[in-house]
Image (cartoon, rainbow, N blue to C red; front, side, top):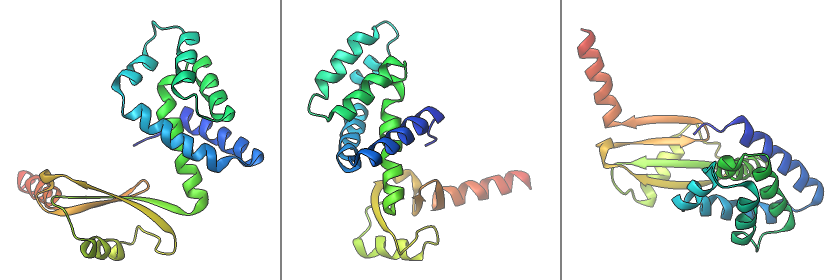
Length: 179
């Protein structure tokens, strides 16, 4: 997913501030909670995206929802809303998480398969990949998509290997159409 310049700038500013203040770890946890909360609630997304609701009301509700967060995170939420960037809130939180993971050498890996794989098979796929830096730590999430028909799609950061049967059939279809 492409991250907007807005999200990258806010996340970088927050990262710089938390590194100076020494609160990166606690804000990292809160940004994870923020991203999950906003992603998991369509009503909350619609609320923040609404141009009808004034900023002060959005701020008071956001501070009530996230009242257990640190003053740093609450100040960030207020700033985002005051600047009219609340529709980017989830992306800002995710970009902050990505930046901290990058600093800590953690790679995010997504493995999409047509059926559930055993741990042994997942390990074989990961070991065979040139995208993955095997010296670093990584967090893997698996997705099952029966429309792949077989094979897998491995995504590491912004790079992807598509070894699915669906894509191979698509390539064959295009080749036949050209000939």
